[in-house]
Image (tube, rainbow, N blue to C red; front, side, top):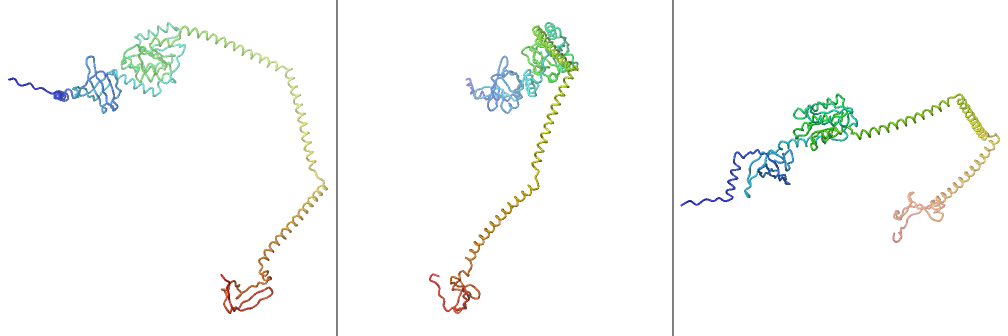
Amino acid sequence: MQPQPQYLTVTALTKYIKYRLENDNHLQKILIKGEISNYTRTTRGHLYFSLKDENAQIKANMFQSSARNLSFEPKDGDHVLIEAKISLYEPRGEYSLNVIEMTLDGIGELYLKYEQLKKTLEEQGYFDEKHKKPIPKFPRRIGVITSETGAVIQDIMNTVNRRYRLTEIILYPTLVQGEDAKHDIARQIRRANKDKLVDVLIVGRGGGSIEDLWAFNEIEVITEIFNSEIPIISAIGHETDYTISDFVSSLRAPTPTAAAEMATPDEAVLKSYIVEMKIKLEREIKNKLAQMEIILAQLEKRLEAQSPKAKIDKSYDKLINLSNLLQKEIEIILNRKKNELAILQSRIITPEERINSYKMKLDYLFKNLSSKIEEVYKNKEHNYQIQLTKLNSLNPLKTLEKGFGVIKKDNKLIRSVDELSLGDQLEVEIIDGIVLTEVIEKRKKHGK
């Protein structure tokens, strides 16, 4: 009899697979690369996405504790290098990557470095328009910093010769790719500024990948472009290629051929310039002739004014003016003296007039004094009567004249019967004398 087969539950199988996956030494630390898709970030900072290549994909997550250490913000399409562990979610039987570290892969790292440097330089003002220098309309010499064997120099020379043969092209040969290119390009920019032979510089190379063009994103090249006294046109890559040198340069051209066109005038501009110069020259000549005519007329007037007859007439007119001024001054002085004399005469007084004046003043003062004396006397007399009336009202003798007397005991006034005793000797002062008496009885008024 065959034994009955043992069936596992889904949970048991899932647990077994989870155990084997998460405890396999080869899966404890997985280094994997791929492209991010279906990327989301939760409000708590956790990252969820899929990691894929041409033939497969796997779900991945990165928790906030690890995600906060990222040096870039992930997005769909980023190629990344990941360190992760395998984990399995039992309820759905799905396995995924638990990401510990993540960095951009290859080109992505270069792009991140490009964006970070661009942001830093923009904040420092490297891209401000105030630092950019105008491109001369009619350059005598054009400097080209590029490879001497590439197509760039040929394109520029052909374009310049076709458009503006009056200029000369000076080549400053340089490396345009590789580790040493940044130093070579920077050195040639410094050399051109030191030579002071050219009016404008074209810095360029043909198209390529971001790695091929990277020398033009290096700070050595950017610094020399920013410090250049000669205006620089950048012509790096194709139309869609942008390097940081493009933003620092005075002008950015989409191609080397376009840079040559920007550095030189075309036929229409030259014709317009010649016509403009002709009009300007004619205007200058006309203005100059008009100025000469004015100067000639002024010289004729000066010559006429310097003749002997003109000098005599001028001196005679001056004499007449001075004579009139002198006559006016004499009249003014005479009138002023007459006025001063009249004032002095009005101030002279005879002795008799002075005596009469003093008499009148004396009479006035005497009358005023008499009036004041009489007024003072009346005031004094009036005040005396007032004071006399007050004094009489207070005089005790006036009271005695009415039949009243003043009672004293031992020279002290008595005001109440309570101050007396039977048998006391009293003095009663009346209007014409003093009466001695004795107290034989005391009676008080009712209610007292």
